[in-house]
Amino acid sequence: MTPLDLFELWAPRQSLWARWAKPALFAELPPGLAPSNQPIDVPKLDVQNDAQTAIVVDLPGIEAVRIGIALARDGYQTVPLFNAAVGPSAVLSAVSLINMQPLVQMLADSAPVLSSLTLPPEAPPAFLLDSRRQSPETTIVPGKFDNRWLVFPQDFPSAAFLKTHQIQQVIVFQSAPVPAADLSHVLLRWQETGIGVFVYNPAGNQQPQLVRVQPPSRFKSLCYTTLAAMGLRRNSAGGFGSMIPQPSSG
Image (cartoon, rainbow, N blue to C red; front, side, top):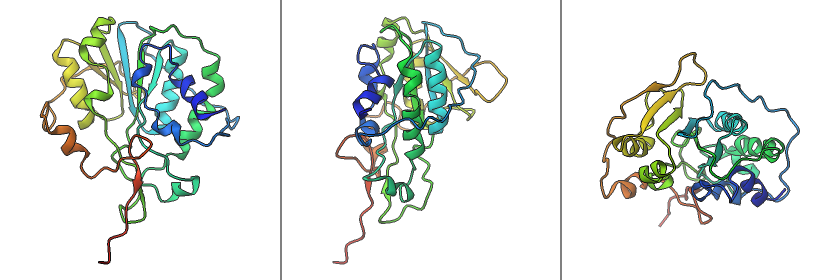
């Protein structure tokens, strides 16, 4: 299975939402990556497929993939937005600020399940994020691979596009009580146009709860994207991730 094969299982090109899928993580995968044949514990969700509902999954990497598989089985089209590089080699996972290797393997392990599904191009979207994106798992020092990342409004469809395709509400799967700051820049734009925003904790027993998204810092500021990306490291293949250089001795 090639990286392109895997990417197209997660974001088939005929899907209405495929244009927003991020290829950066998939572009770095080894050509021979194969499923491990380990069974995937796919959760049973209480949220039913609704053509007027979009999903945003903002959970730790592996859990986001597991939820994504469950949503795909329920008729949602997954849209992977993982925008961090793995690193130059598997060995690098030990020095990456965010270890992406388990997530990558889970993406590969899902291939048999996804290949058995046939979804219509207009299937409602389930956007997948990794809630660890701004939470380094090791000390930020020279010699480490810095693959922290953020989401921006342009990473998602506009409110007008969603409403044109009959999306009237969005459910955010997350464990936190309020949306992450970077995601709030997206959700509040949607909410201002009348799209309902709900928060749902899949580990809890409650139904999705309607929320009022609070304006994040620099909301709709022209300089927000530039300032928010300061300190992050772009990757030449796309997305975020590069080595933290050693300080110059000169």
